[in-house]
Each structure stands twice: as structure tokens, then as C-alpha cells.
Length: 67
Image (cartoon, rainbow, N blue to C red; front, side, top):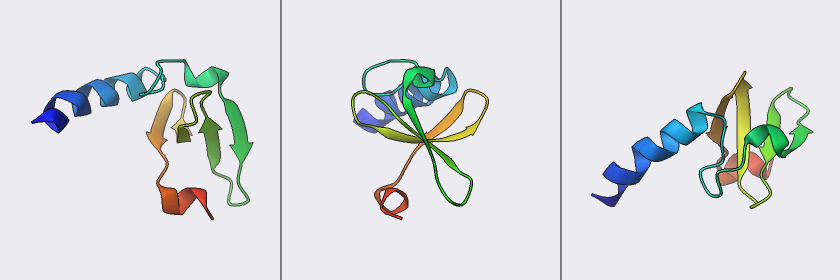
């Protein structure tokens, strides 16, 4: 039940380009480019996201970060 409430809120925050943890705009996060061309954005709270397009983000998985 808890996921049913939190999931849509987190999806809405990501669609707005904001961190799901602290609400900071991800445009202000630090940007790291990987060798394969993907872009990682790290928020000030430590959460890591993949940038998919203009204001489109998704949370990075642990296995994707360590590569």
C-alpha cells in the first residue's frame, strides 16, 4: 500500500526534473559522462540518476553505477 502512494509522487517529481529525495532540481546536480555516452547526474543528497533527455531522468541501479 505504501508503494501505491509513493510511486506516483516519485514519478511526478522525476517528470518535473526534481530529485525524489530532497526535491532539488536535477539541473543543479553534478554531471558525469560515462564512456558509453550516458550521462549520470548526482544530486546533493547523494542519489544518482540517468539523464534520458530534456528533463527526463530515472534512478540509476546499483549495478549500473559500479560499471
